[in-house]
Each structure stands twice: as structure tokens, then as C-alpha cells.
Length: 166
Image 1 (cartoon, helix red, strand yellow):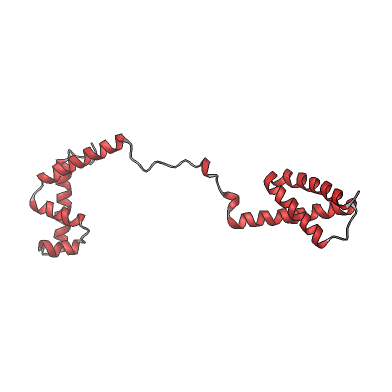
Image 2 (cartoon, rainbow, N blue to C red):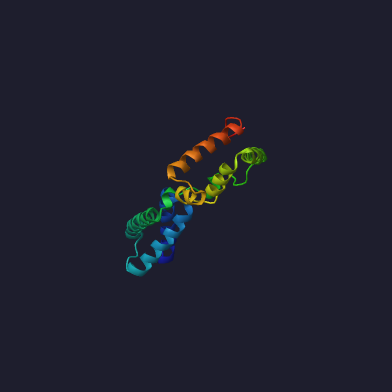
């Protein structure tokens, strides 16, 4: 047997060994890498009885390297994209209708509130702090604003029928 026939036979054995442990696609790459190492570093070894254990040992080292690299990159715990079920960001027609009804109820209830409560809610929706609201409404104390806020929210809840959702 010449060296090409020996390497062909060795490649088949390495491929079978690696495929049984890592999968066919990775095994083909590993077999190719092992044969390159054998050609570059062990060109003086020509007997199949010597090349087979050498090739399998190099394969083991290469497989360990692939596993380390995969673990280091976080590939070992990844889930295929096809297996992930993502929730739709678009609201269903039922959710859209429920939200629209809630907004209509809230708008109608806010219209029935007093002027101070409507102004307080407007300022809160603009992102103003209670201290800023105190200044704008001319309240004597920040606790006064807290009290107004609690009363306005209570009145709004009562106007909406005692609960926020229908």
C-alpha cells in the first residue's frame, strides 16, 4: 500500500471515530485538519499500524479543542432559532378593542373631573415632579399636592365605575 491509500483509509477511520462523537459536519473538518497535521509534522511515519493510533490521538486533541472553543463562545447552550417561539409585538384585535374602550372610558371620566384634577393629571402626564407641580399650582406644601393627587385618583376611579378595567 502506498501512502495515499494509507491516508485514504486513515481518513475514513478518523471520520467514523469523530462522527460517532461530534456529528458528521464537524467530523469532516476534523479529519481534514488531522490529515494536514500528519502530513506536515509526521511525514516520516508511513506504516498504518503507527499512523492509526497517532491519527486517533490527534483527533481526540482536536475534538477537545473544538469543545473548548464552543464552550468559550457560548455555543453549547444555544437554542436553534427555529425552535424559539417569539410573541407577536402586534396586539390582537381583541386587545386593541379593549385598549380603545379603556381609553374612551378614561377620557370621558377625566372630562368629568374638576379643573384642578385635570390640570394635575396633565402635569403628571408631562412628567413633572410633585415639587414642580406644587410650584405651578401654587400649593402651600408638597403634602397638599400629594393629597390632591390621591383625591383626584379616587374621584377618577369612582367615575370609571370603581375599577380601572371594564
